[in-house]
Amino acid sequence: MAAVGCLVRRDLTLALRRRADVLTTLFFFVIVVSLFPLGVGPDMDTLRTMGPGVLWVAALLASMLSLGRMFAADHADGTLEQMLVAPYPLALLVLGKVGAHWLASGLPLVLMAPFLGLQYGLGAGALKVLIVSLLLGTPCLSLLGAIGAALTLGVRGGGVLVALLVLPLYVPVLIFGAGAVESHVSGLGAEGHLSLLAAFLVLAAAFTPWATATALRIALD
Amino acid sequence: MTSGGGTFTRYASPAAFYPLAGRLIPWFAVPAAALALWGLYLGLVAAPTDFRQGDAYRIMFIHVPAAWMSMWLYVTMAVYAGLGLVVRTRLSSMMAAAIAPTGAMFTFIALWTGSFWGRPMWGTWWVWDARLTSELVLLFLYLGVIALAAAIDDPRRADRASGLLALVGVVNVPIIYFSVQWWNTLHQGASIKMTAAPSMGAIMLWAIVVMTLAFWMLSFVTAFLRVRCIIVERERHADWVRKLVDNRT
Amino acid sequence: MTGAGFWHMGGYALYVWSAYGVTAVLLVLELVQLLRRRRAVLRRLKAMYRMGIDEA
Image (tube, rainbow over the protein chains, first blue to last red):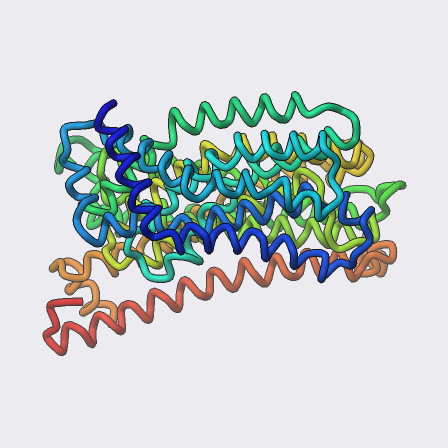
């Protein structure tokens, strides 16, 4: 466990040093969210209906763009190979790396979202549900995305290829995440969606690190 | 991989499977053609006109079998991929790679025919119902497996990476299908159901079954044809391939 | 159902025959492409052997 904590702290330190990377993800989120009204028109009612979906898709895309960073640096300087032969279970180390990645890339999205939600006329209750859904959902995106990032390590066409691999896997998270906000707005209550999302997160945390570790071994053998 | 370990394990080597696949192809091609003709007769001629959907419902006799095959082939591909990863038999990975494009093809056919069925029925070329949307995601899953294998130069790594992706996908397919179902019923109510097939007469059921079998036989043919190409490409440094190329060209 | 009705498909001819037609074309194309791939591979390998290439 101590090793994992060490890994998380190291990754966060590195992320803070390369603040630009982290901030560009955030800015991408903001820009994409701002683009939709320009494309669709300023009618607040339309935007309010679209809001949850747009915010969620934008967060999803921003999260996906940041995946390349998860393993690339460590792969380049050989740290990744060290992790493979380290006396710790690789899946656990992966969990640590994904956690650090989420803290640096996913959490800022969660914190930014309510402000962007105001641009879409979402009420206070909807914003709260939005935050919770993203809080539960963005770690899922990082966990699933890690599999894609590991599979495409060092492969040409990496960024776009990761998108193709990972977006289908994101579909359930998107449906439950955006659906949570929508069902709150429509008065049905978000508990069902949020509990499913929470269950999905638990399952993802339990199983995806193993798949990611396997993918890393495949990539590095 | 044991050689000479038993009658069937012998065929686990690409070199032994190559001629076997070649001999098997006609045994699937002929039934495929026969079943297809019979199925087309049942669907286009024998089955009566539906009083609600007119003759447009006959598209169902392609759409439903294609959709079933797209799902069946994904599972089969994932099984071969799993064997390739766990037991490490090269041929298993080659079979997975051979099946993928055919599976993607059937998925596309399901989507295309679904669209052409939907247009006269619902007035739009696309309907975001659970079945079509899940098929669309399935197409993306297929394309991902194919693209990943194509992007990796080292054949072994390509096999194992796309194999892992196929396995991850197969675990996710039920989750995706369930979530899309949920999404669909929440947003549209159950009113629009794309595949609202007419109440099944016996002939209609038979037509679907026969067409499904025809597609299944056909997928054996394409898989065997493709795996033979893959085997020759991969084993090009082996003596038996040199002899084969000399004899065939 | 035979004769003119067969082609007319109760007015839905465009849809039914587009669907069936594209399916048939795609399946045939797939088979044709596989046969051509086989021939191309054999040709390429023959050239490769003749040039004495042992890599690639």
